[in-house]
Length: 358
Image 1 (cartoon, rainbow, N blue to C red):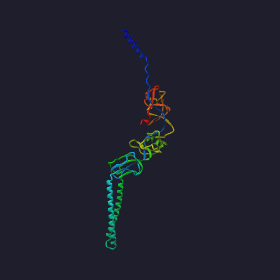
Image 2: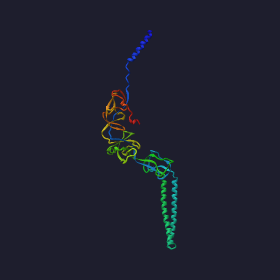
Image 3: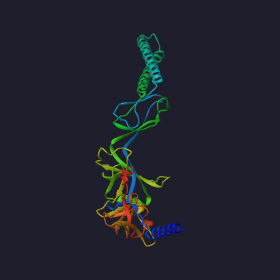
Image 4: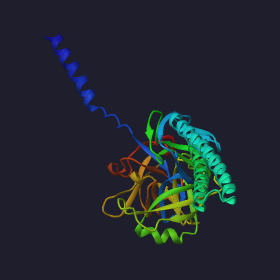
């Protein structure tokens, strides 16, 4: 009994010691943060695609079966380079038939010329009537006309034989392949789409309530999605007079002024209107929330959460432009800020920049 009592007293003391100890402090919550960076204000930003000003669909002038396609999409071609060929059998047969018709017409003209000369002499000697001579003269004129027709047809057939090879009249880049070897195409059916790369522009779509802003814009700034550090100047070259029936937007073309070689066809670009000297702070869209008292953001200061009432200038596709309530360089919480409270200890972790998320 004394030994059992001693064990019970020891266990009770151990339990009392455990209950009397303070609970461990909660671990600091990890939050994703991003620095508030300066960005120019703009009246609108539109996403578009780098396109060539001159784009052409190449097609054969004659129909037939494609026997070879000599280039692929993305190939750089030279003027006069062979791009595709048709089966030459029918074209060669037509050219041979045209040459035979030309030879027959030349032979017929020779015969009718000899008859006319002979009847000219007989008419002078009064051995034939004027009507007989006129018949020979008409036959000669008809043969001469048929010879001219045969010559023209022979030239057309020769040209058509050359049309069996598809080529471009100027250096370009193949942007699309619309037909392949083994396919039977009709005259004028597009086979390849090519673009001349010397003039590049951005194709964008403008809503009808922004047409006046686009026309009045003095400065157009173009940024590449692949290289956001590259800034290009542009100018409005073309604005469609009618809206697209499906999207109800107006197609616009922005000419790029002196684009570098890094700008390639098909790249994604953003066009900003009225880029001015006024700047704002750009933060992610997910960083702004509202609890009923206006827009807020939460920042990390000295390892703790702090709220900031901000003034929003623009909601843009690349973030929110802030013109008040926030300082450049502050660490803004970009995810889950609405679930935190002021004074809460957190562990900031830099969010992955958009350029590295691709």
